[in-house]
Image 1 (cartoon, rainbow, N blue to C red):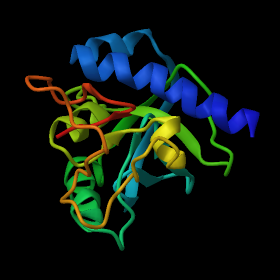
Image 2: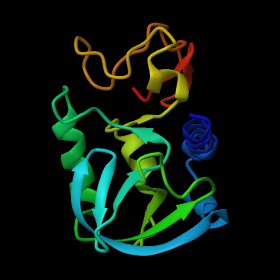
Image 3: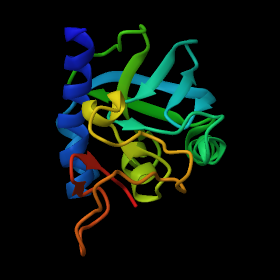
Image 4: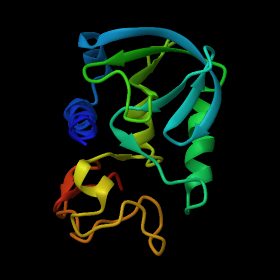
Length: 172
């Protein structure tokens, strides 16, 4: 349990500042986990690499495939990374509690930050421990609201995408 919390905390601490600044060059400060080719996109936040390992995108979460916008999120990620060589970068745990690799992805060609682009396009949300566990008054992916889901607390007027909205983070 403590390890899972540490992974979530590390992913949030890494992703939130990167999402806010929009400067993908800051990824250079992260430790390299190597390079790989994406051979399959499993969900909007998980890919399968050429070595057969599954990789969870660090710091973000996408709706499940059977939830609204789940397939659209997966398709957006596939358009971006399927068949592409990617760099795996990390500042935290290299694996999640399920044994999957966890990393920030950057396209080898063009050096574009995958999670940042998915966040800007609304295909994923910043993953927080609070919302991931559904303990802050919001469901991670409400069935009734269009993706991206809204937290119970409204985002302050004029706030930018990715800004804190009450106890949760929102990308809409």
